Length: 105
Image 1 (cartoon, one colour):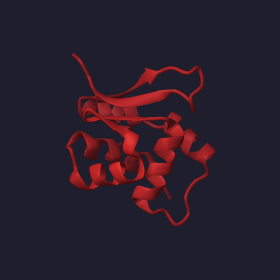
Image 2: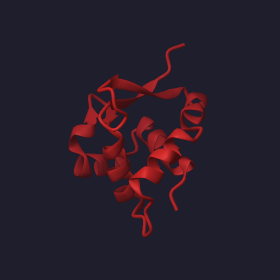
Image 3: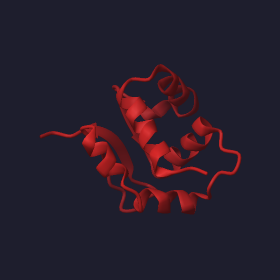
């Protein structure tokens, strides 16, 4: 079962330029990596998460979204100096583009 810690770990791996994660992103979601920045919509993040973790019993997209919104992912990332921000707001959570960013203090 997918959990918030696994999703947080994806973002932490990216922030550390993990070669395996970057390779998988480029293979399965090429437009996601722009100038060393991970950009994604929620459906894209969901699809990549399923591929990366090779889940035998993946959650539905609805459960995935619920997991994101009811988790402490941004709080956990903030401890590491990171945050998920909106890059392009399309007035709908599934259409907006998000990105992993370093917190500016």
